[in-house]
Amino acid sequence: MSEVLEEWSEFNVAMVGATAALAGLLIVAMSVNIAEIMKSPSLPPRAAASIAALVLAMAAGALALVPGQPPALYGVELLLGSAVASVMQVHAIRVVLLDDRPATPVQRAGKGIVGTLPVAAFVVGGTLLVVGAVPAGLVAAAVGSVLAVVSAVVMAWVVLVEVLR
Image (tube, rainbow, N blue to C red; front, top):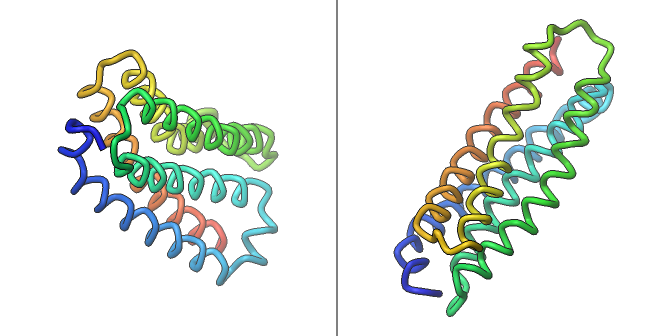
């Protein structure tokens, strides 16, 4: 791991553990009511996008710990992971927009933005790392990790509440 990535090692170790645990808990929580969740057209894709963001944060933390890795390569890895998570997020947004249940445009936008923010932060971080703005790129990646945790907790709450309505 490069010297600049070394400075972030404790943060990355903590985020790998936290995001792995939260992803597992989210999956277990959803499995309790999976039949009800699957009846909703929008909850499964939104839950999948949330888990994808957590996996992205977990992978980002783990990849940052790879010994001898240059920051630019780490940036490319973040961009590739973000591309995969973006596919899940775009699908979730598409399903939310096509959902025929009553919702205001603000509600629909809010449902999409919550999951989009962490992926966008990772895209910014990866791009900054690739172009050589390493400190800013690492901060953006850290923001992406924290936002992934926050959005996953919000999504878990939504899934658990919506399934009972």
